[in-house]
Length: 418
Image (cartoon, rainbow, N blue to C red; front, side):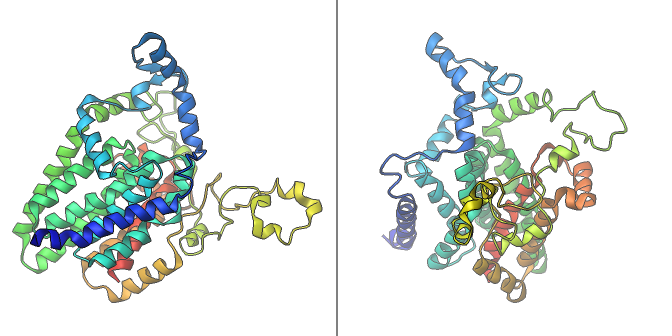
């Protein structure tokens, strides 16, 4: 009974999160409406050949010619018997909510778990969860159909919650939470997002280490670190089939070492990806102000004619011209929208730099600065080159502007600490 009373507020919050998520997509979800997501539509088209083969023969093909120059189907939609149990755990965590609804729900719940691990009150953890989950960027990638990316990001806060619990002496619960959500991250199949957050976890581990050194609690810190390493290895091992096949296949792709380049070509990295390709989507230095002012560079890459506010004062006789002029005028080739954390959240973040004490503040600030500098890509090439040349695996990933997901995490976390 005492346990029930203690967790009752958390149960109420979880129910409220489910209701809030449902209300956000109402009435679309009750009417069966479907978002026209570009990547999802492209995925359906790419999978049509394999679907027809299954219907015709009753067997699954492991190869398709419908995407790139042909590729294994297990790279398009990984499915292994070894992760069936994990998939069941994932559905339970979603509370079997319908599509779109559970997207927002897991974003809210994940950050709530993190803040509760930090020992925030129920109401403050709930507020923080809303600040994180309703960042405009997450809804932009839902609309674009980047669902694997979205789900991986949703599982990162509870992964870090396990880390927080372990360093606070709750080794068993912290280790279990970390192992489960590392496994869920990897099965969500967007390794790039998981890789980026290794930097955040490293900075946070250093902060916990400094704190332990000051309090003369290094044995506990080392024990927690060992538990977390084992939990991480366990989460990886559950997904070993997928990771191994991806690793093997990558050698035969543009991410593998190429022999068709000049040995002294600076544009070529050790992995095979070209620097120009990696940094094609680089955030402009001035564009970084979109964290505070969303449309500082015009917003999304849509025709100016689609902007109702702009069209209020437009001359109708020039409509054909407005439909050809892009609204976005930043340095990226195109974008579905800016990375915007919210003016109120940014205010609290800056306030936190002055009033929050302890090494965790500096860890979050360092991670924020790192993500901003790396998001500039070709606009700050010296720093980018250093990471491409010396940081393992960094040269395996493209679209460097997406590393701003780190700032999307650290800014609201420090804001709630404030």
